[in-house]
Amino acid sequence: MTDDGQDLGGTQRAHWQSTYTAHPAMYGEQPSAPAVHATAVFRAAGVRDVLELGAGHGRDALHFAREGFTVRATDFSATGLEQLRATARRLGVDDRVTTTVHDVRDPLPLPDSSVDAVFAHMLLCMALSTQEIHALTDEIARVLRPGGTFVYTVRHTGDAHYGSGIAHGDDIFEHGGFAVHFFPRHLVDALAEGWTLDEVHSFEEGDLPRRLWRVTQRLRGASRENE
Image 1 (cartoon, rainbow, N blue to C red):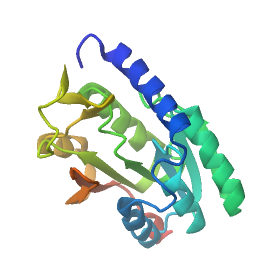
Image 2 (cartoon, helix red, strand yellow):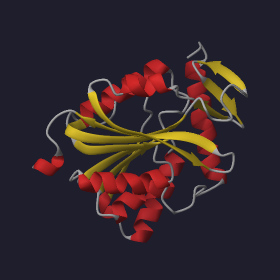
Image 3 (cartoon, rainbow, N blue to C red):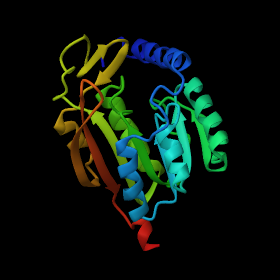
């Protein structure tokens, strides 16, 4: 990232806070398609608990909870997580959901080998440098149990917004106040080094439409289903 990386991170945090305040439950209550897919993947792997990074107001975290998983939801927006907790209480799943305000530039607030699965929908392609993305993936590997599953989605360099808007360097471009790190394929492959890469699935989402990859990879080691 360029020298304004820290300033950009702070600006993005404030932007998301104000966005969730102005538009409560902005993504609705229905889960994303990647979360629905991840539910099936997690269940087949014998997953019991899920860490969601960048949970926002919680449409996907709440879906996982309704499906019977214990969910740890993190986001750097306290406003979004307040909305998540309120909805969890209304749906009667608050006993299966915990929330933590956290910036993924910092170490994950979990012990080593403490969670079965990690889910992140468009979190890795926020305003993070390539170095920060690698550090985050290392942290995810640290907190996953052996054989744990990581499902994430990212916008990629085939997206219509790639290369336009305000350029911040390192394949990060800003549109409408939102900064996105667009992934080249070699970055996906680099993040899978030391893992078993199960799938890189192309899909589209939204009105533009946004073009994304859904990536599923497993930490090498014994799987949960063998316990």
